Length: 150
Image 1 (spheres, one colour):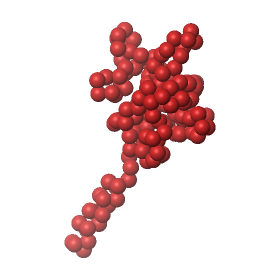
Image 2 (cartoon, helix red, strand yellow):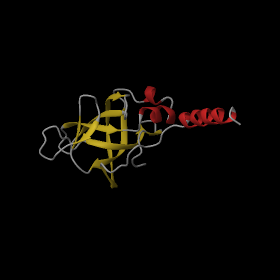
Image 3 (cartoon, one colour):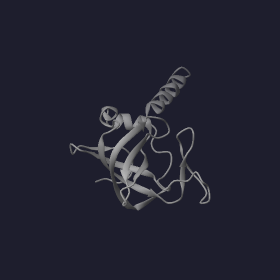
Image 4 (cartoon, rainbow, N blue to C red):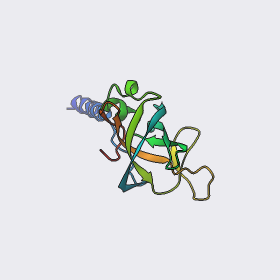
């Protein structure tokens, strides 16, 4: 019995360690009741932890260029969901994306992490959004984040 207990404990730890971790926070940063569709060209994609970031060049209602930051899922979840996502989301690719707008001002720090800020902080941006599905020009749909679907 003394030999079996350590072996069972080690086995339980190995099994628990191999199970991927699920979401570590809620979508409280975003208005989850109002989904918006953005369209534009991908500027770049940052494949980093804690979340993949996609920079989208779009046009405002006045026709002025504006850059949106789409916060996707974690790096491990993004790569596990669609293995070829890196090859498909390249700069210059035209996409449509379903997103949630932020509840409060957000900013992107030097480590490329999306953080809350105060309303009077100059670093704030209303164009950092929670990403959901992305539709490519071919009609293919990719689940980039946990936000809205088409």
